[in-house]
Structures are given as C-alpha cells and as structure tokens.
Length: 529
Image (cartoon, rainbow, N blue to C red):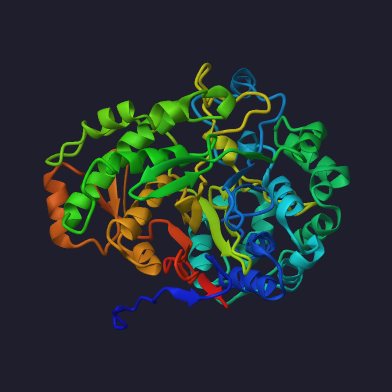
C-alpha cells in the first residue's frame, strides 16, 4: 500500500492517454492536444515548444533533440535531431583561434548548428496528425504574454545567473532588473514568440533559411564563430531516422538511440549489472556500490570510444558483446571501490525530457537540450535565439573519435529510452541530468524491474552517481549506508541540489492501464484521461 505520510505522491493512473513532463505548463499543453484528438507526436511538440519558453535555461529552439517512437504494436524507431559542426570547424582552426585543451561553454565554437527544429519537423511530417500551427499556440502565448516562473526553474535560474550575465543580450532578457526572476514572477520572450510563429507556418525553413538564418550566422561570426548561412541551410535536413540499439535486461529489452548519443553507455551499465543478483536481497550499500562500479566502467569506455557513428564503427557490437561484458563485470570487487577512471568531460548539464502515450497506443520518448544551463549563453538579439553549447563535448585531440571536424556531430549525453517486452513497447522513459543520464537509466530500470517499484516510487528513490573519483549521493541516503560505502573506498559528496530528474509512462500489457510519473525533484507532473 502507498505510504500517504511519505510526502511523496503516487503514480498517476489513466486508461486512454497520458503525458509526463518536468514542467506543469508543458504537461498541460500536451494534455490539451491529446484531449483534442492529437497523437503522441503532436502532444510532444506542443509540450516541448512550451518548455522552450517557460524553462529557458534547460532547453530551447537553439538546441538539439533525440526521440524513440513506437507505433502501437510496431517496431521502435530512433530519431537523431542533433546538430553538426560548421563546415570550417577543425581542430587546427580552433587551436589557431587560441583554444587548447577544450571548448569553453561560452565560446562560439561550442555552438553546433541547432538540430531541434529539424528534428521536430521531421517527426511531425512523418508521424504528426494536427497542423503545426495548432501545436504552438500555447507556447507563442506564453512567450508573448508571459508565464509565471516555477520554484525549481527559479532555483536553477538563480544558480546560473552569474554565467548568463556574461552575455549582454542574454543578461538583458534573462536577468531583468539585474537578477534572476523569483518563483511566481512573470517573464516573457516576445522575440521567441516570433520565431515559434515562423516555424509553425514555414516549418524548418522558418529557422534554417532566409533572414533568420542569415542573422544568426552573422551574430555567431561576430563572436568569432565559423558558422555560415550555408551551414544553417544544410541544417534544415540534418535530422534523420536511425536504427535504435538494444540490450536484454531480465525479460525485457531496453532500446536506446545509437551513437552519437550515450545510450550505449546505459546499455553497457545494464549489461554489467545483469551479471549480478540485483533483487530485493541486496543491501542498499551493495546496490549503490555495484551501480557505481558499473557506471565507472561504462563511462570510461564511453569517453574513449563514443562519437559520431561515422567515426566509431562497430563500437556497439563490441561493447555489448558477452566477452567484453563478462570481462568488465569480473573487474568489480564488492569489498572496495576501483581507482578513479578517466573523466575529463564537462560535468552536470541541462535538459528536458517527456514521455507520451496517446489514445491509439503510440508511445514517444522525447528529449530536448541546450546542454549547459542557458547553453552557450550566447543570445542573438535580433532573432531572440539562445544557442546551445553541445560543441563543448568535442575533443581538441587529433585522431580522437570525438575530435571536432567539419559537419561532425559531437558525443551527446541526452538519451531517451524505451522499454519493450515480447516485442511491444511497454514504457517510454527518460532521465535528465547531463552525464548522469546513462547511470540514471540503469538505476531507474533496476528499481522497476529488479525491485518491483512502481513508476513514481522508482524515480523518487535516493540517487547516487560515480564520476571523477567521487560518489555523489543525495542527502536521503542513510548514514549507515554512507559509512559502509566510505569503508569500501568511495569518496562521498552529499549534494546540495537533486541529482537529475525523470519521467516515464508504463503501459500494462494485460490491461492497457497507463501508470505514469514525473520526478518530484522538478516542477512537473503526469496527466492522463
């Protein structure tokens, strides 16, 4: 029985359709589309468009997206909506520009050609049902007339105020009166409303072509970027469908997008954990330890090998093979933590994720990101577009699989997930939190499949994340568990802000009942009918 004194909430139940996002206005926009007969794709686009307005430090039209789509009874399809580097971008060019070891968040070179709008439009063209103009109505209204800032958004906004202050145009928009808005204050983005209106009428051409593209390219060039109008024109069709990758966990199949996303790392962690008994007999300390050690191994190989798929052939088959998984699992010692493994990627970043199941039984797992809080912080004052910083993931090492190169996609941390059983999709799910996402997928699925938790319970469980020689834990991890982990050699860091966020919707194969959740670490909710 659910503990109604726990200060948590139970999973949301519905029989026909459901949407779960990390922002209440985003959820309500998608729910409205579903009640009007729109399908999962329509609802997702309406929701993400709203969230690009009301959660501007986490996502935006100047970012990237990925999706997993499962038509009722059909095969899972993967959409890659990530952007490419400018045609002139090379390691040599960036080093000549004064960069050495990495690409800073606020550098114009951290901006690849945004892929989100290309992805939205391809998804809508192939699987949407309602006209695009209907889907953007709520987002345009919030951008023009304003929206109330929610508590978690306000907290994150304030934490990133010092970063966004470095760009005069972004500071003017996002720091009214010189500071971040507080919870309940109203904020508006009129120029973003104009961009959304352009896209709703012209599709991808409204972003990647004409005066808008010319102005965006010119602004990035003024900052020292290598972007051209031609790069933006090519970006219109950069989103494309790809074959998803998958791995078995228990009696389910877990689907992820292939590289250049880090979904492979999530599958590798799950494959390693499958070599151990992760059931209810395992202590909390053992569970966290196993998850930490598997995460270190998964991320070490991610950092060394995952990149644009053209630059890391056969990596999926190799890393998920029994030979590799058995070898990695055998390295785990239950008595002690392994020495810190290589970690020289940027740390936690910002993203939004949503799950949708429509009345026809179609399921969509969708994620949209600008990477760091406020992305690159570079805002074009004419178009109102805030550019992401995904190019900061590139390496400036000649010969590295993830080295920057012309028209190349960087390694991505954003990963939607889809759980299937007997060939049928039973749960679109996702975890936010930048690099935590792959580790988060494994922890969430283990809670559901190994411990029998319901959806909301599994996502609200205490979290931990091993990276850079440190084991981050949330304050809700018990003291005796912390002492046990410290004795094994883990260096603990109790976090002052929550680790990640998540949404998911489970579809009962027997009854069709929908059971959804939205992480209580965020402002959002799951709604259905």
